Length: 310
Image 1 (cartoon, rainbow, N blue to C red):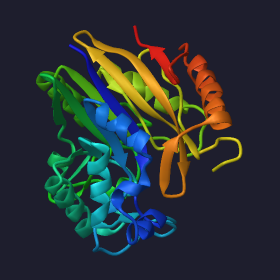
Image 2 (image 1 turned 135 degrees about the vertical axis):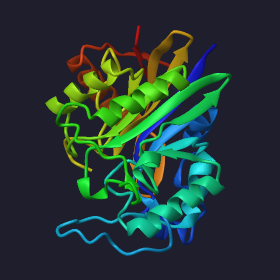
Image 3 (image 1 turned 120 degrees about the vertical axis):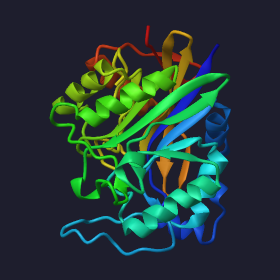
């Protein structure tokens, strides 16, 4: 048995992308070579960092600077990429209020795309999703450590919030245990830590270890807006280069994760394509440094950056 899971981080289809979708097709946002990669994976999971709706009003929090809302047509971009599941546990799912979040659920469900990390109430927001490929089951748990005012309540739509700067919340441990009982592997996808950091901050590294100790097979975090390295247990700035990124492909067998393959990408305005030339060279060097800092070695095979996990 062999299964490949594609992982992408913060995916935002609002603002300028939403304006582009008013005149361009949903498929035009991504280079065909990128879509070919993601569609070839057995499963594809990403963090959808926006709501999908034509309704709602900006969230009334003083000082909140950004509000991301994608038009209903944006769901076709996700379908084109072959997305199986998105996590909505992040700081933009409620940018246009509960009404727009509920619309997001409806658009995803109509497109056949599962979601985790948000719900019409806290019990649904915290519920794992079970994805299947080749008879193999992957459970996905979505969590965000910000903002607290987006947290779902017993009777209130919102996200699966947990303060990950402290000891892992009991509900998080319970969700991972529940997921472990229902699947062959458990992927925890936390939205955590500050933006534009070169490496995971200390509380993120501590929390990642706690999630693994709680029963997670793999922890794939996001929120930094730049890629970090891969640890052995698997946790447009002129210096940080947030216009360059990686698509992660995680290979599993019967015993668990085997290796991670990272594909260099260039993130242009409303268009993502494979990185080339000096762009790819910069990504290779940065990724090797980031992995080395976490104790992992990187090799290159056919243009992909490979990190063995055992």
